[in-house]
Image 1 (tube, each protein chain N blue to C red):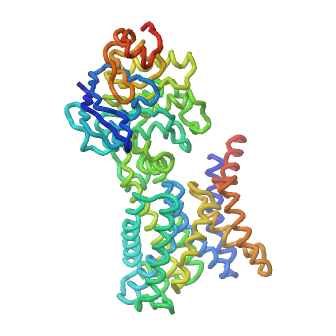
Image 2 (image 1 turned 60 degrees about the horizontal axis):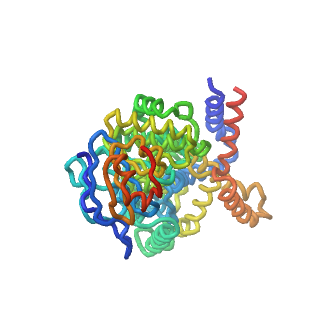
Image 3 (image 1 turned 90 degrees about the vertical axis):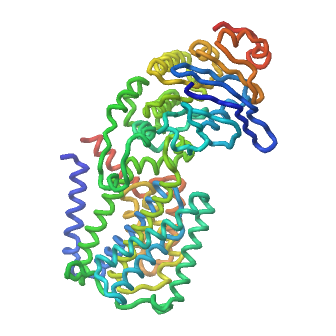
Length: 247
Length: 314
């Protein structure tokens, strides 16, 4: 397993946001995490990145992640995107993407101050071509539309060549054509050997590309399995889907 | 050759020729020297506030620490200037480290208050110490003497300060455009996102404070040996606020902003005239408000617009 979530519990004061949640993410698979708003999906992501205190165990490649600080996770091979677009608007697209490479390229203050340049062109071109954002590299992020910025955020998470990527609603706000392209990109990411843990509300995306799905409601796991199994689960239909859909 | 490079070379040539043209008016050259010293300090603050997003209302204190350290080491202990200035830079860097740690827990208004405490406390401490000359200040500080060459005249000081200013500005430019600079700007724009991207927030916040205070320390040391006189009143809270205002008016997170802001601040009263000098402060205050509200890049906006036009016509 690339990631094992064991009895994860997150409390915000008296509110139990995630309650004894357990699931595994297999290597080179797409694992969907779905559920109604407030189910605790993003809280799971924030726990993995130690942005919220939690109980339980998060094990990445047989290493307990509890003792590692947030900033060390990229170097371990984990990266993420955000539910609400989180872009460095004062930077160009190129600079935004290169931030994702920060912990992978070593340098020091003296070298930086003396003008020593790190060569990251190869990685930059690879990821920009994959996400079709090559023409925007020198443009300031503040001038770009939402759809392109979503790709910039994804590029920033991908440039570090992670082994596990956490995508938080990557399809939110995209038009149908962009969503189709996103599906292809996520499949391509999987083919590159990267495991994907993805939160998504668009059933057209998640049911189509996921290998496994975990369904949450009120912080608890209510169902798990292949997309085919999940969409026929009455508990999922009742709590989230409302009606059966076809994978 | 690019037009922007040509303009930079022309400005450099102008800077080299200026003191020769003004050789009959040493007081004006002295003004330019003061501008360069303040611009160094403002650049340090610009690195901290503009690029790293950390506010400081105690920057004048770092200048004071640098100035007094270098002056005392030369006058009381017979250090040569190279060692006295390096010691001043290192000591202010250490003080920056000390002040930088609260920045890990504080931000915005609360950080401003914490740094303000440093500013007021250090001025008070300097007043009470005998080694600093107490309330009388330190007088007759010897001019810079580097490898037995003494920088006595205003023109000599001008060229030395110009070289130091250019070196520091180039080093800061390199830094902000590097991997570390991107990390600082990322922290300023979105701290949590920066951390999840692998940036060690605590390290970079403290580093920003240390480098910024080291530049202020260098500026203070140069001030001491250029002006030849130090008094705690010159490095109080009001000067920290003035430095902040100069940096904002010049343009935060721009390389030439600090210099433009200081130029404007020093020459504005002279432009307005002695009889209406009281208006200068009010006018400068209005400029600060306008910069914050409408021109985040302050006076540097002029340079950016000029650059854009040059690109359009080239």
